[in-house]
Length: 328
Image 1 (cartoon, one colour):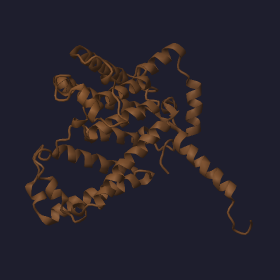
Image 2 (tube, helix red, strand yellow):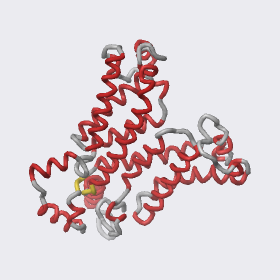
Image 3 (tube, one colour):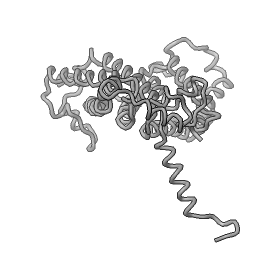
Image 4 (cartoon, helix red, strand yellow):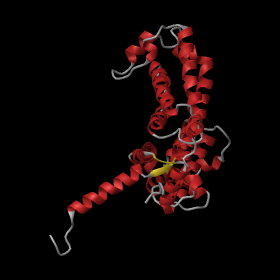
C-alpha cells in the first residue's frame, strides 16, 4: 500500500526494537547495588525486631501452633517451617540462617543466590503465621524477588572485588562500551543489561497507580474527607507531632485527601519521562517521608523508598546527562 499507508512490518520491527531497548539496554549497576544494600539493611532491622518474640509468633508453644497454622493457610501457601522439627532449636537455627543470607546479600557475596534463599525464608516465616502480616511483608518479598532477577552483585560487592582480583579489570571493554553509551569509562565499567531493574520500576509504578485507582472508588477519598478519619486511627496515626488544624478544617482535610490521590495517580505516569522524572521521584519521596512521620507503619515506607531507588540515574545526579537507562 502506498500513498501514506503504514508498513506493518516496519512498525512491528520498531516496536520490537523499542521493547528490547527498554528492557535490555545497559544500565548502571550501581543503582542495583544501592537497592541491594538498602534492602538488606532494612531486612536486618526486620529480623532484629522480630527476634525477641520469635517463639511467641512462630514457636509451637506460641500463639499459633504449627498444625493450626497449616489448617488456616491457603491451599497454595507453603513454609519450610512446617516440614522441620517444631523445636525452639530448629526455629532459632532457621532464623539465624535467614539472617546470614541477609548479611551475605548486603555485602554482595553471591547476592542473587542469597536473595533467592532469603526469599524462601521470608515466605516460610510469613506463611507460618499469616495473622501478623501486612503490606510491608508483601513489599519485602517482592524486592527480594527482583534482586534475584537483576545484576545486584556487579558493583559495590564482594563478588565484584573477587572477580576483579581473579581476572583483572577489563578496562578496554569498559572504555568501548562507555564510548558507545556516551559515558566516561568510570561509569561504563558498571554498565550491564538489567531487565530485572526495569521490572522493579514497573512494579513500583503499579503499586502507586493501583492505590490511587482504589481510592477513586471510595466515597470518602473522592469526597475529600478520608484524611479526617485517617488522622483519628489511634493505633497508626500520630507517631510524631503534626499541626492539629491540618486535619480539623474541611478545606485542609480535602486538600490533603485529594493531594494523596493526585500524587498516586500522577507519579507513576510522570516518573517515566526524563523531563519530569526527578520531580515525580521527589514527590514520591516526600509522600513516604510524610507518612513515616505521621504513621506507625514500621518499615513499609522505607521499603518503598528502596524500590523507588530503581529510578535513580547516577550520571544525572553527577550533573552529566546520559541516555543509558533514561526514560523516553
